[in-house]
Image (tube, rainbow, N blue to C red; front, side):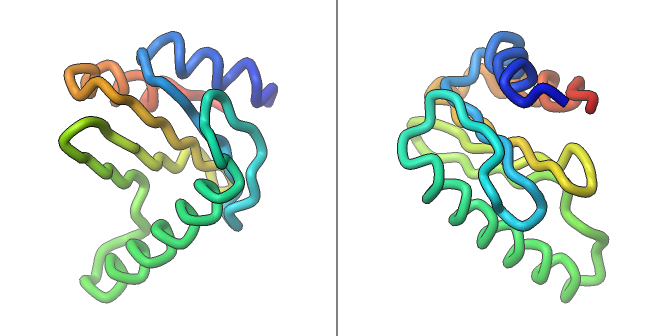
Length: 108
């Protein structure tokens, strides 16, 4: 997989402002338009682990997507394979539909 091309495609098709690609251990593989990308990758990994533990305690399977929405933006963590997670950040909440479609269309 060409990480740079994939992230560019995600940004173009979704209208997102930034994107990260991390592995299942939280290691940053690639980033576009994200400040402090290493810190964001590490925090994203902690959030993913905590949410998956919560899901397990509730009797659910592994979580494939986490959406963090604020008054002025949205951050989506999306599992695209057993070892790859793409994360997108968007300041425009009206683009949520495009964001979801772009994430669903990712093939590796």
